[in-house]
Image (cartoon, rainbow, N blue to C red; front, side, top):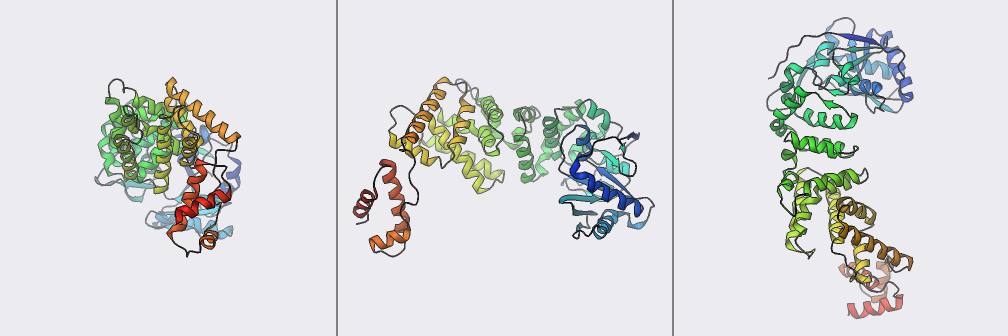
Length: 468
């Protein structure tokens, strides 16, 4: 197990003039009054306090409850307090996690978590700590970064900076581990903190302090003890920030990207004329709108583009292998089946635009739009973002968009779905229900793609010959 010892200088700052978010004023007042009545000390802790300083909206309100007098019930202080609060204000019963000494309670339509001050002990093979009740100082120092280790005491609205670095680090826009003398230990305890440091650096526009950064780099291999779901969630949070490429460049610099997405890092190794696939993907991630599907597609786009670059035939085996590779990556990261299918749909049709030429018939254009499955807007955006510096491909995109708009204007683009119901088909052809109905509907779509102005009589006549 890991153990850390600290020397602490406590800094206290008066925050009675701070501006509290309106939605939390009533909640905090209820907590403060109840704490005073029942001889508890209540502190707002964690990211909420940090966000007050940087004027950022916070979504999580965590309250640490500390008994003013030492007694054996200290470990259950947060749980007991939540129950007192629920009773006083006629709230639903709190959800209790006795193992961790925590409770969740809904107050004024907001979820509030009540916790005890704790100290933690880590096993080498897990990032999940053993917890015990601890002092305020131990609770501050078991946290990840100094900017997240500030406590706002509700009884007098004073900030406790128990690491002595937090307030200055916020002022100077620095991310630093709570114990700079044991930075490597902190990341070995919970290597997910490496990803959090990168994400928060991007979120807040903060720089990572040098010794913290070096310790992150030295602890990358430990990430293997973290569940892939937690890693994926951090990647998702990075992807929805502004200019996520900065974070991915940092992940690459500390050799963490090769642990998570080695296939993306490998794109750097391709020589002329394919030497820009890695940076092109990162540029695309920045250019597309804040949509997790689009940004994942942009990040991975170079993988299939590499396979497509020397193949004029979109349906070549190499290109198909590229999509199979992307599907394997997304499954490895535990994305849902629906998520994977949408990413692949957008990427496939975006790559398909590369094959566009003026020789395409109107039928081919209609078939393409149908295959886009109402996602043409996202497909266009991904293609534009990735190929923005390629004049030939951008020309193809513009020409295809103009073709689509022209057919739409002439009412010759979209097929009419559900033109004939299954019941009507059974009645017309005097056949019982079966697979043939879906086959017939598919045939109707094909007829409409070839001739969107085909009348019902023409469609039925073709169907009769096809079914017979």
